[in-house]
Length: 479
Image (cartoon, rainbow, N blue to C red; front, side):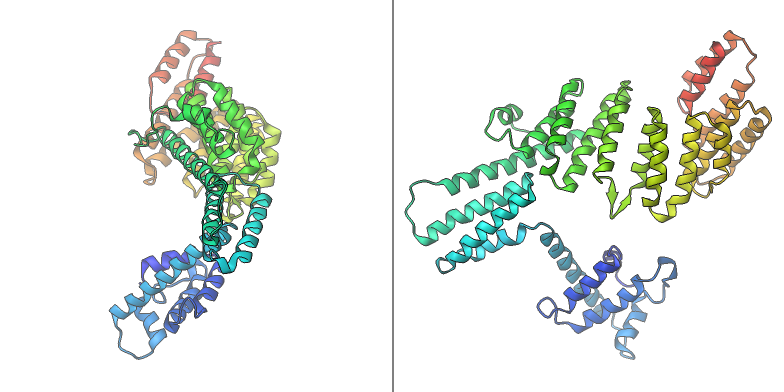
């Protein structure tokens, strides 16, 4: 096959990006090798096909060589060099795209080129225009401070170029101030990420602050800069999770200064808030934080922080529904499912709609609707298969459909035993759930002692799905 590195890079491009890359490639300023253009055109033709319609033959080096050079003897070293050169051009294009993404990168770079006495008018005009652009953007994140640092520093150098005598060092002082803001913001951001990683990894991240750093930030001249203060508050929130006021301050401050940060940074900041709610509060028994988490998800949704290339990420979709149902926002969740399912990746839409509507009906105790809705779910996906069967089992229990429940327990057990895709520990969790459900339905009515004994057994079983539901049902049997 053609270079995997090259193919993987180009495969990530949309059709629009493939078109733009070709424009980049055919420019003599960037590339004069016509063979690279011909190689790209062949790969472009392949990549514009649906993945299931691409063949191994048309992606092979020998086939591509034949298309490029006809009967010329195949030269693997030359083919690899061509691929390597096209990889390099692809990387240059990607770097150029990243550079152009921020509207201030180009003018601040141009200031260095304009730093000559003969270009004084050009320099002054560009400084004025760059500052106006900064004001229009309204951003006050770390990168904005870095760009301001560059502008002020180039202004300082330009005055030297002009040989002007100085009464003050205003530009140099401003440059230094914004450089400090940039460093402190980035240092705090990195520290916040390190604190968050500790929730998921067993070893601590070796990111250190110098002694009394947070106190210095709080008392220093940079504290009211949004890029500094928001990460200071998040750091305090993660450092002292038991002090809930830090969370509220961070959340409120971010709401007030929402427009100070670009989309990617907002996504990261709201992820810190979500992780705090889940890992520091909910997982430690503070269930009232489900409402806070739901509020954060709603804000993130309204401000389009949960979308990737125009599509709603499936994990966010699932989490929003789970949290919304937990706090009994049934109508909102049902509207959410109807409105946002079409914004999932196409292959996830139909099953997601049917399965999650069934979840809503289950929480609303409309059990007949659950059964009807689950009939529309396709169980090719393992998550839907296990989740759907579990929901149906709970539904039959609630409806006291003893015969249907017994039959489902037996068929579910067979499914678990025969399916090799299910991990062993997951199988055990479901097997234990089926075993205890069978015991639950066999409990003699009004026998509190038997119910209490079963409750103890369930509590001591560590590997089991739907454990909380089983405990609730046993609790009802105890009266």
